[in-house]
Image (tube, rainbow, N blue to C red; front, side):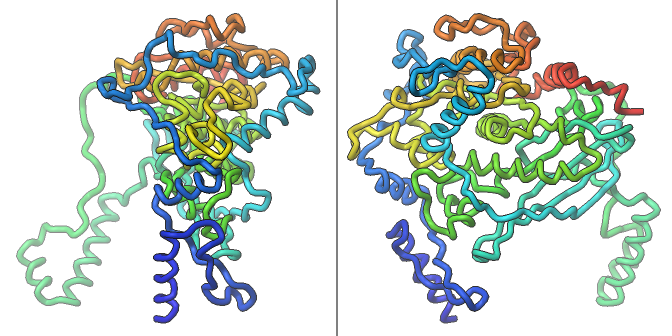
Length: 522
């Protein structure tokens, strides 16, 4: 009771203090050291804590997505590019032009990584605890009409240094059961679940019900009377769905079905099991575990980088799975998880390719561009996706004066360039179907165009359009003209999803890695 009371006191205290203040001993852990009490800030308190650390007194408010609101987002092309010139992706900070692949790898790329880590996405700590993967379930299932082996895994993060926070990464791995060898795999940010868990046969279920009814009746005479009155009743109903006659539904099959049918595998990894998608959770999850439950410092990693770290740990497991072609593992995500997928691809070179869906600011869209979602949207509401330092670029009043997106030392074209020369497929839908103007499709295309020189320098094929991002115009919707290179960009006629582009991604990736369904499946 004493310890419970003590923890309650410190939770209350954490709501009004920050940083190292409010740290207290929770008792001996292993008899050798004391641990700080976890801080339980609200998102507003955590945000204010970071502003205080940075010396930021006021932020410019983010624009409204409601076009009728007084502070609505800008959709006037004449006002879209107040900072028209991007940092040159192939010019060193000292002004020297990068002319060789060696200069890129040894000089320019490290400069970009440093800027992105310090000012935008944050740094992964040097010593993040080890992840141990355990296969919890292995099941023979079907995806579409293809038999698969589906595994549900948990990646437990060693929390022996801070037992108060537990992180178990949820992941599902699904591969064709009859593949002739290791298969390429697309890792997808989203809910981790077995696709179609195998159920007992009718005969097996009859035995289960008979045994269950006998045990229940033995324990409770009243139930025995009920079962006698309703002899056809079974406690567990049949789980086998009835066969449905008729044509298949219109449209493409689910993305996972398309992947399996083409001889790929897929992985579903749950971002929420790595790091919460909110500011109140920043002292929990993997970030909180490493920080021993304390608030972040300005250069610490945000949720996007944490999700990317979790994906890399998932890849660690895939490299041990003989059913997976670990040299051809891709990463996929849509919206905020599209941002995370691009960050993953940029910072983890073992991923061979990426499908980046409708990612907006913090993803493929230029941070400097004033269209829809703004830097101020991220320095306010979604600040926890980014490093604390990123908040500075929304500051209207601070100890350092003020900063705006034009002050950023780096932009999203350079994030895309970090993935070169690997395969990058950038996907968007159309506003008319729900892929909102807010996402700035044009700004994404401009960023892709501006990243081209790095792909060419490293011997990869670019989009095949002129490098003038100022004048870059998106191709027509549903056009495949920009799918010949290792950098691809396609806008489908659907909504806020990359599903309509999945079949094009698979075809494009197959051609690039020399894969075919016929060579993979019997």
